[in-house]
Length: 406
Image 1 (cartoon, helix red, strand yellow):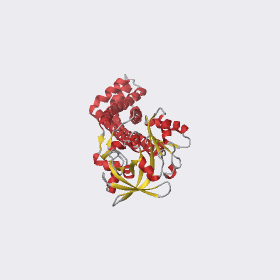
Image 2 (cartoon, rainbow, N blue to C red; image 1 turned 60 degrees about the horizontal axis):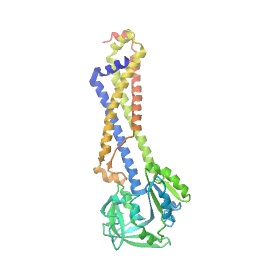
Image 3 (spheres, rainbow, N blue to C red; image 1 turned 45 degrees about the horizontal axis):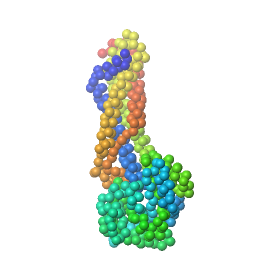
């Protein structure tokens, strides 16, 4: 009876109720959409870092992590790769030689990190070959040693495809080594900082320059079935190679986890702020309802409706009004997340600035089910808080005075 009465009371003034409902719906839609955008940006940054830069897991000589000197090597890498690939959750693995160096052309120079790779293996753990925008990924046969560079670095050095680059690095014997490379490919990722600092050459070429054996490497990169499998696989591999440093992507780039945590907290706090602002609109509406129905409430109390029923009637009206608005907002939000989560949103106008910070200009927003559930709970709490003042106002009415009110 009270529920039916409360529902009918909501629609006695349709325009006022619809204003509140749409205010709640628009507030929730805006907050959820912004949260979805931030989630999408961070998720893409994480995926791009794993696909292009760090893989799911990396293995190093512990001393290599201290100063990145190429003299700290992993021996018998072929044997270790076979053991690693025997793990059920490991999909692919590759090994690299890695060193800091100086890249120079006829007019300019820049500090770089140079990776000596086996292209056929590297294709299985990173996606640099999919990001080639000019030239190719070591397919061109050239008399000079081939090198693949980032678009930002190519522009900085004025080194287009076919141009020569001299790479200077310190060999294992302590002497400086100069090697001539010819650009065969230029890649572009969503992180211009990565593109400016990293180049790729064939492992045989870099090993020869640095004096490293072919069955040695500075880094082993591993891909797993799922990003979340990295921690479990790391523990399993650690048991096989206790003397090596084995890190999941979470340890290699803890900033990604920090960003994820921050975005989670940002989303919840944003919704709390929006709902806190909406409380005042709901309170104002319900106070107007109480004042307009002062005589009616007084008559109901006079004919026997006790204060407990009045309390529940006002509280249910407030809660139902809020939940209708919330349901509308959630329905719109879910539709938008489904649409843009599939098609994506292209921020081409801000592409340069976003890529400078490591974000993709094409964002696929998403929101987890847990977030929707939490928002629903927050709306209910908001409605209950907003109903306190109007309910108290109604309960304080004197029936004798209320029935005489105009």
